[in-house]
Image 1 (cartoon, rainbow, N blue to C red):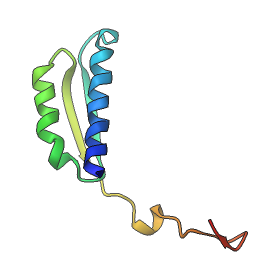
Image 2 (cartoon, helix red, strand yellow; image 1 turned 90 degrees about the vertical axis):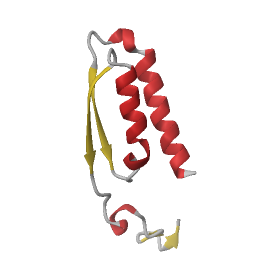
Image 3 (cartoon, rainbow, N blue to C red; image 1 turned 45 degrees about the horizontal axis):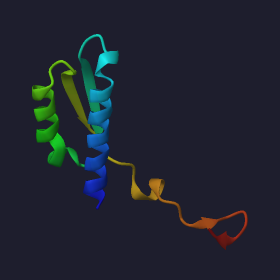
Image 4 (cartoon, rainbow, N blue to C red; image 1 turned 90 degrees about the horizontal axis):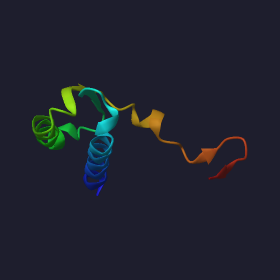
Length: 86
């Protein structure tokens, strides 16, 4: 389900770019930051879109970034001030 949501988000981004193509005077550079490792699954589709629409996308830059440590991104579920679970 997570991959579907990510792919859906990517598709929506592409549709927004296509829908607003008239706003751009020239093709744009896309910078994609991959923190979840989804790029492995979507890289071919992204490149295919760039090749099919050179009037929209001039360059694609991908950056692989590690997500924060699990302890930093997840709440403990406990409020220290009020001493009860959220």
